[in-house]
Length: 578
Image 1 (tube, rainbow, N blue to C red):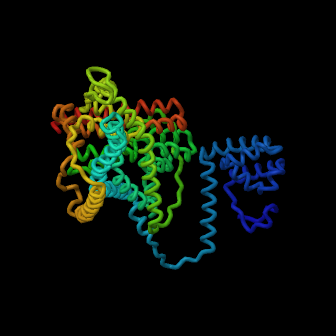
Image 2: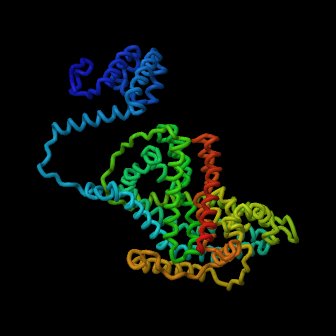
Image 3: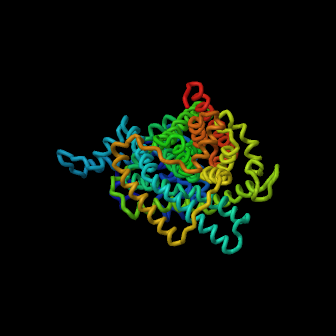
């Protein structure tokens, strides 16, 4: 620290760096004299430091200014010399010395009491950021999130399902009858196509709202920043920058913004590796599939199965990251991770509602766009006969275009235990959006189910029924809280009566797997977790990572998912499980 420089006579102090850095700054500051236009705006020393740190915006300004070419030539020479000393961490060295300067200055001017008391945030951080306890605490919190998500939202899930399958369907059928379209293919389009497809996904809105509520509480309280700090050590095991954890966390919501979030990483190899691993973080679009299949085959341990799937995605990403680190990315070094931990704060109702509603509304918008269009296409394929007897919208499902295509794909999944054309067709449409897996299954089995004659009801009676069932669902949720946090901590609840869709799925999986339906269901869940993400995520990967790495991701994830599901099913059979 000095005031000897006449250019800084009006400044009491300024940071003096290590000799190598200081020499480079001085030489580059002197070269700035040829760029008078910028010197009139910026201090030469500050501008030199910013350029050495890699500020692309200022570099572009210098390049366009008269005399800027000579300055950039000097900059490139000095940067090469500094990289030989500091590697790629020149900006980190400059930042570190500024922090050291600030620290020393604080030590000189700040008088601390003899006995310092820890703040509440410091006390909490001593536990949640502990070297060995940090990751187990993070995993425990995630388990609690999924436990509360599945158990609290369960009664509301049944309520939404009852509203869509009962009063809403009846109203649509009645309206179509009034306009003279009852019993025609238009009714099939609305009931078996749009309502069965979109409604099959909207049923899971209470589950997603519960998940987003829990995550909003963790984010607004300040804990998620601690989670990034704790997971930095794990990221280094994969050869990744600590910042890579942030796209990974985003990936639990949606793979698309997670891939775009890799832009925050400066190193190209970091961006590519993070972009390849982020889709293994189970996005919320897969959650409806988990809830449905887990409720069918593992009703007593549904929330634990869902948590296990999220954990499996992390484990697979870790193993793949280690493998890539020692093969395709062998010579890549991880950069330091510097972040500031905010103090803990009490989440506000407004902030929680904003995060929860923003994410839920995005899901609903997708339901009325991508999912509805896909449901209509799937219905059209199901309604179009390609073999056997039957007319449009009046044909056996296995004789339809959808059944023919799905049947041709089914042998690929036969070794995995779910080689039925229904499951194959659902996984194929799942490439469009993972929520469509549920909507396709709902459409497929809705066509095959024998519809029972519904009792005639009035509009007022339907509204009364909706209100009464909502109150009942709320009461059931309140009753479940003591069990969730106490006696029922590990899912020891009674099995509920399965719906028609759940019963049809159970029978189909049992038949396709030769009587090992639960094992086949688990293999199906593992495949859904790991296989190729939606087409929007694939497009994002092409834009951010390039065509080569996009295809590497698409093919690689499918192969990994197929092999993992094969190990689960065939390994389970060898061990006598299921």
